[in-house]
Length: 124
Image (cartoon, rainbow, N blue to C red; front, side, top):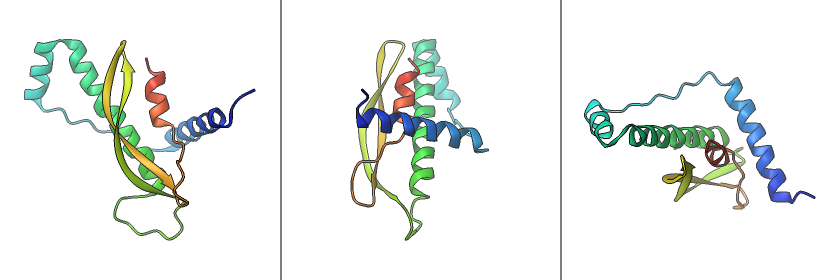
């Protein structure tokens, strides 16, 4: 028998997939040439990890914007609010990669389930 929190995670992933599939938004990645050159000297894996980190953080910001709405815009009908951020991690190629993970709460100040964090850990 599945626990309630497992069902909520699965629903969050399904909502994320349908919203991302219907969205025409593009994720843009700006990696300065000087920084890319330094990362290449450290190794191709370091470049891939840095790129993955930036893409994962942008995906999380996109999903939070979709759930909560744009920053600094008042919305009396919103269902969730931003609640700061916290350090998190994602496992890539057997390594724990540190990420800044945004936090979201519903209007009753309870934790909201959203899928980007779970999706990052599925991409091992």
